[in-house]
Structures are given as C-alpha cells and as structure tokens.
Length: 258
Image 1 (cartoon, rainbow, N blue to C red):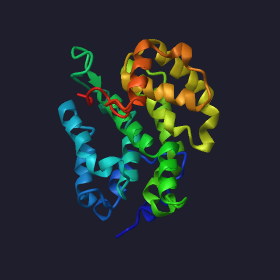
Image 2: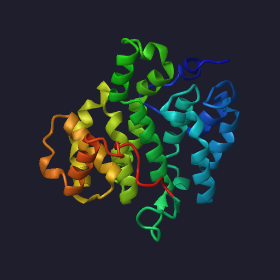
Image 3: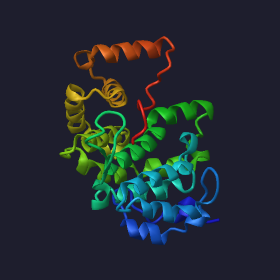
Image 4: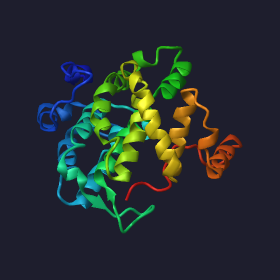
C-alpha cells in the first residue's frame, strides 16, 4: 500500500494543487478509511460539484469514513485538500433548504464544505494534540502520521479558507471564520490572529448560532482576551451547564446542515 506520506510528499504547505489534479493523480484505492479502502472516493468527490445540491449534500455525507469518530486516516488529508481546492468553484455556490434557521433562504453548499473542513481542523487542533500527548507520553504524532500530515498543511487550508472571511453571504462568512480559528494555530499563521480576532468580534456582535459563538469565545479566551462584554446571557447559561456537567459540550451544531 502506498503510504500517505508518499502520496503527499510533493505538496507544499502553502499552496493547493488543482482539484482535478488531486482527483486524477491520487491512488485512492491504496488509501485507508474507517471502513474500507478509498476506492469509492473519486465518485463521491466528483459529486460535490454536481449541479444538483441534493446530490452534493449526499456526497458530503459519503465522506464520513475519512473522519469517522473524529479520527484521521490515510485518505483524510487528500480528501481535505480536494474539499479546500473546490471551495471557490462556482458549483459550491448552490443552496439547499436549511432546517435550522432560514428554510426559505437556504444554506450554501460552500458553507457546508467550510463546516466540514473546520470540523476536521478542530479534530487536529492544539487542544486535541495536548490531550493525545498526555495519553501517549509525548509521542502522539509519531504514532499518528495522519494527524501530523493534516497539521502540517494548515497553511494551505488557511489559504483556501481566508478568501471567504469577508464573503457577502453570512453563512459562508461565518463558516469561514470558525474554520479559520484552529488553522491559525500553525506557527506560520499567527500573524493573522489580530485581523481574525476583529472578524470574530463582529460575528459575536450579530450571530446567535450556539456552536459558532462557543468556538469564537473559546478562541478569544485562549488568546488571553477578556470576553466578558461579548458574552450574552445565553452564552453564560450554556457555559454554566457545561461546567455543571450538562448535556452540551460545545462540540456540535443544533442540527447538522440541511
């Protein structure tokens, strides 16, 4: 089996290959996922650009085996690179009904892809790494090259996400902000923190999305910022529930997209 490192050794950390090059140039069947080899992935990835948004959303769900149980597999990085590479494709501007807030408005497939990529980034953030290091005596990434590979490519993912930080569509813009937060933990990206912090504060001034707010508030606190003036009564109530062992741990949306 071709290793992930062999498959990605020619990729730089700050630039993405073209999505079609990734699709055609990757030996998907040689890469492992949670359930089987990655032979099913080319068809699923191609469907992300289908003109029918219903087909696109089903294709997103088909990617679950590459991040099953918040884990990384051989196929995870190539799939994530493909998703990042198609973010600016016109086909990702399609919308589908959004059950959560504004069903008449719809939810952009592009925002859903940013959500997917952001969730993956949180699974590899510094907090997750620290937990792993405590359980594996400091050798976590040595035994987990799939996570290491993803973390090494965070600058490339940020380059793909950052053009949407000021997007005119609120759902896309906020999904990009939340996805960018774990990415800029990479040492090469820390210079972007101040600007991203300003965008985070603007999001907190208007958004009522529980997941997005929790991620943004947590990031500001990790950066040493005082968030007292930014927290709402609902934020405080949810934080209190979490501290007291409530049923919400800040790790999911009210409902999945669509």
